[in-house]
Amino acid sequence: MNYFIKNKQPLLDKFGHLSEPGYSTREVFEYNPEMISASKWRIKEWDYYAVLSKDYGFSFTVADLGYLGLISASFFNFKDKTQTNKTKKIFFPFGDMNLPKSILEGDVIFGKKGFSFRFLNQDNERRLIVEVNNFRKRGENLRADLKLIKKDDDHMTIATPWQENPKAFYYNQKLNCIPVEGEAYINGERYDFSKESDFGVLDWGRGVWTYKNTWFWGNASGLVNNKRFGFNIGYGFGDTSNASENMIFYDGKAHKLDLVRFEFNPYNHLESWYFTSNDQRFELELTPIIDRIDNTNLLVIKNRGHQVFGLFNGFVVLDDGTKLEIENLLGFAEVITNHY
Image (cartoon, rainbow, N blue to C red; front, side, top):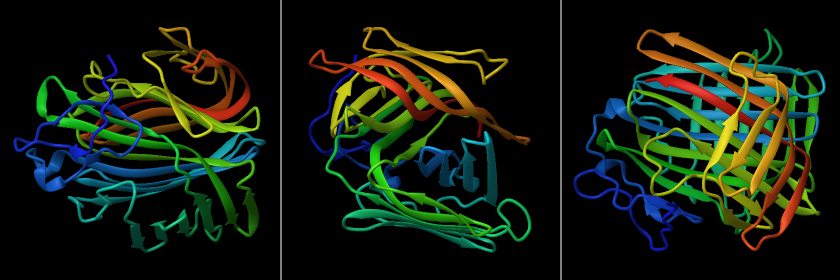
């Protein structure tokens, strides 16, 4: 398991199949939508950012799912244990949202009445400029201008096929531990972010999925021993026999994990979650603060999920055997079933 890919190469071959399933710690695949042989109805592309501070956080999504586009902003108040979300749906974008082919360059620009999202990929930073009118209620507008400082870090890259459909694939990259600075406003109330203590994650996905899937994802970034630390864990998308997406990040370097199991109460997601790896290198408990519930039903398009934010405690072990104690690390875990 966990086949590491070193050399740059096209993601897809001439038949529209994955050239080489596996994982890397850099962008080694060249994504070209013109090489996809599946129907445009099945193509899924998204950029998702989550930026978290001690007491609050935001997430922003621009997603082109073929016959449905989703543009979403969320605010999390961890002190009050509340959250606000507002989403705009665009029907039948079919690639017209022009999401970048690479995580290294290209901007995401979206503007419709009441929604303006600009994810700008600049030389030394990623800048998120977001405006949402009537975000919480009429007259309470969201304005954010955040800078995510670029680092020459390892990150998670994975290319996963589906056994039942050779034209289906999941190409995903996640950037952890990105320092964040800037500010956001809701109805004039200011929320500041400091690059010394606050961090973001970028979830960058491209692919062709089968119709129904359930996935599990967990992610966190922060400081351990005054060094940037984070992790990405998950499973559920496709055939992961060549690689899992489980990685620890410490001081800019990736440490590969094999399998990580999620354990939680499916009837009460605000009870503690537990995470354990088959190699005993990842043992954490998540104490939930907020459960962001999504329950979308548009007949053939359905999405039911729980994204739970909270504090992680436990330990992890790096590749060299170093044990790190994790205390009150802010992050999230989710379980989502979708039909689209």
